Image 1 (cartoon, rainbow, N blue to C red):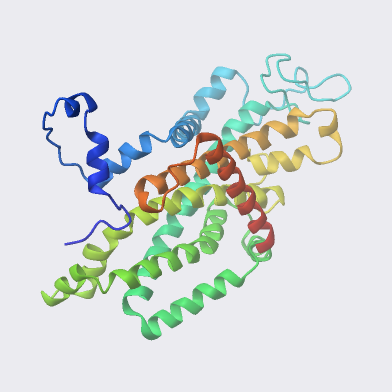
Image 2 (image 1 turned 30 degrees about the vertical axis):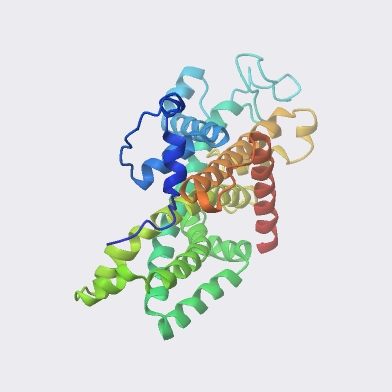
Length: 352
């Protein structure tokens, strides 16, 4: 009974695009193979070169995170091993990229920068994906309940979301870390706690519109329970929204993890994280003579967040073509993704 949700499709336009021009010129009738909305969305996504390049980079990052131990073994340098003889000059300055077998140079303690960036990829994806997944579950459940029941349930849950959004995350994180101590699991929970209200609001708005649709009324008339209606009838229509927002929320959480680690509230040294690598590089003025110590972790962070932003933007265009921006060229999409990234960074600073 459930409908297509956000995956809007102009049937005539899709069919016109699938026709073979040569057969059409000869007046030969063509048959069309039925395609699901998800299949059509994938076909549209494949035409977006920027989104596909971004997807390829994301897959590359996932593979790097999975095979981090193997990659560092091939490089021959562990992420926390201090190579005081070959990794530092006689004056204690880190060696530059390409010297003594260090592809991206070393840091102030003689550790291999490339190996630490590789392991930092693990932390960033684990926190970004883990916190986003937890936020999706909580936000979807709360949004479903608030949107479906309305009334006092909506009022209570809505005010609860407003209260959470009013907290300055850095002050809250400082208080939590001071009480329980920094850890990866705590970092994921704290980030998810401040992420799910955004998802809850979006889901609530969608459910308010869906609960009055014909297929929901039909299920209710057949005697379906509220739980069955929410899970079987309404929830499938939220899948596209959840996927789109997840791809856009992951880079925000990655930046937030890097920010907390930079301030000493997240991943603690010697465990490698892009945030604490940048923080260590800015301690003193060493980065002025060892630029690679600071630049390469920053480049990894920017490229990762930009790739997720561009892929999420293309995915939104593919799943909801009626509101998409498929007419934009590759350069325009990259510029738009960069503006989104800068905007999210500014928003994070304002919330702090």
